[in-house]
Length: 195
Image 1 (tube, rainbow, N blue to C red):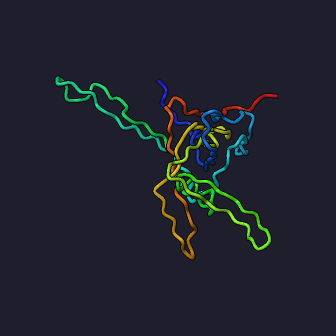
Image 2: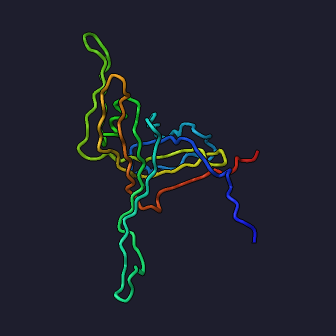
Image 3: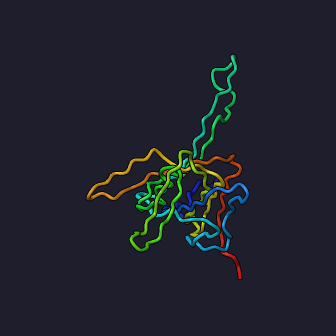
């Protein structure tokens, strides 16, 4: 029997980028075309969420319930009670759009500059959590894209932003999946197309 040898080429590091678009039940989010290059804009309404303070984290939390019987001290099975996939990060770009993701939603109205009127943007926050489709892209161990699409997620976080002379402002955000795990798509390109 031959010894087990790890494949060091499959150990990967690197950042991910996150895209979001407003959830539309009549126009479900789809994965971008396989021909789209690594870290190219996704188009079709997808918006790059911006720079982060320390990157993104992908979380997958499952709350389980043990199934037991009187005749055995260990569980005979486990069932999933709740399952949540989350994308978490601290956005570092100080914009009203960033605040929408962090605070859970809102709309921005624009007034153009004119005579005796400065140009301005006004953010109107929502009381209810906004729903987004969310996409993640990263470079896989083949040097090609791995992409996730969560078709429906809520946005928002327990948010706290410091306003300090020597510290950048950050806006925490968590996108939490609102779909069955079977609806979350994960594509990985493992070889470029042949000509």
